[in-house]
Image 1 (spheres, one colour):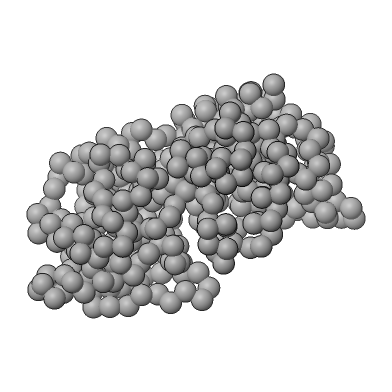
Image 2: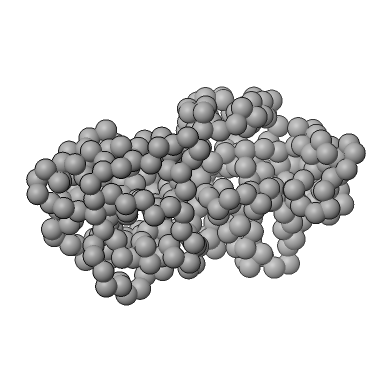
Length: 332
């Protein structure tokens, strides 16, 4: 097969969609070496000229013709407006519509138009929770929406813990839907109880987002990729208090490193964390404080082993195989 994929996320900052596009390309090429998987973007050199600058209308179709692509996979909420080949579109979550300020108006309107006009042959979602939400909101045919979970990169792996003071870790882009306020309140509760824990926030803050502050809380900013596994491994627990997610990739990354995870009690994170994670209501600082207190004072090696077992349910090899089957269905 000759599959063209939207490579534009590869040019952006490191985040969930870039990780997805990069890891999917690597896995597809490794698992299916006789196929051709080509990323295309109007941000690659040489830059489009003339009419091809209108990338989603004309340029992308011409680029696919040059590489003789059989189909297109839009890895980031988009496919060509004028469909000349079968196409799959990934919808990572519905945050552009749930929280309009978190995404550009172009993504909101473009993706909604493509879905309502039924332009993608198939839509991929990373979780069943997003699949159900998408079908309900856009009335897209259920038999054309396919869930394929994501996975953690291979360098997220268990290992020996470094010496140093214990800490809780919350890692990811800092923004409103990550619900960090509940952790600030939980930390204040713990301080009032005389339990002086340390919370490390790691990740880049969205423009205009005020990074939470409080006693025992440290923000270390965006970290290099190679430092992340050790951050996960050395944490007393990884905290993931989001109100809404499409998948929750840091949960899998943390578990693959053998870390204990405490996640918001929402359907998508239960889907990913299974019985291995611990859960707390996203709006209950007391519930977070109680769980954090128990883990801080009574480490649980068995819970770490369960994290490693749960992480084995996700692999890029299986994900690539599932996408290859979806591409075959799409090509017809």
